Amino acid sequence: MKTQLKQVSGKRERQAIKKAFLAAFPHTIPIFAGFWFLGLTYGIYMNVSGFSFWYPMLMSLTIFAGSVEFVAVNLLLGAFNPLQAFTMTLMINARHLFYGISMLETFKGTGWKKFYLIFGMCDESFSINYTAKIPKDVDKGWFMFFVTFLNHFYWFSGSTLGGIFGSLIHFNTEGLSFVMTAMFVVIFLEQWLKDKKHKSSLLGLGISLLSLLAFGSENFLIPSMLAILGVLTLLRKPLEKEETI
Image (cartoon, rainbow, N blue to C red):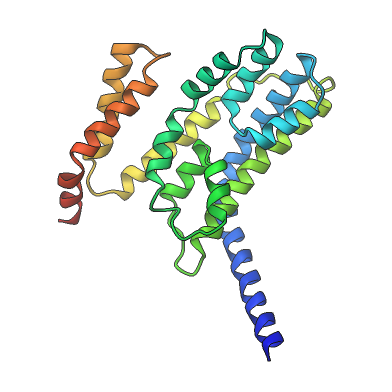
């Protein structure tokens, strides 16, 4: 009897996992288009910089931070300076602090998957997991896991192939990074159309614009995120009250 119950339970779990994968995969297709080619570019860049394919393969698997991985090439070629590497990495990926705060409630109840979700929470995975309308019959934890896993795999496979075949592949990658920008614009527009009230979005845009004018295009990101966090924290109750009306 116990064996039969375990078999039934195992079958249901496998069905739930399969359903979550099938629900998550379509959301990651646009990411594949950008990640795979950008990963190839990164692998090729590592190859022409004199590194074996093991470097982009292991770095994409364990670091999984595209901007940092590109910067790491110069760090590896330069003098050993761990403080500089730490500071630069923190500056580049400081936005992930705010992603984490936003996902505190969402990640509750996901069990062991939470650790991988935290590790693999890149910009694109955060955007999908935060905004996607997950069907009620799909397990939320497995859905977010597969979104994160698939995006991670796209980057890992692209970087590895670029590192392996870097010396053989020659193509013009100019403008390719705009794929990610375009994707975020679409996500923002979808979120705008979904929400009835747009005060928080307008506040974010306004604060970002002011920070851009005040600090310049290279330094505005962290000040704008801090300002947005502060303003939305102060206005949290009025905004939540307005949304319920």
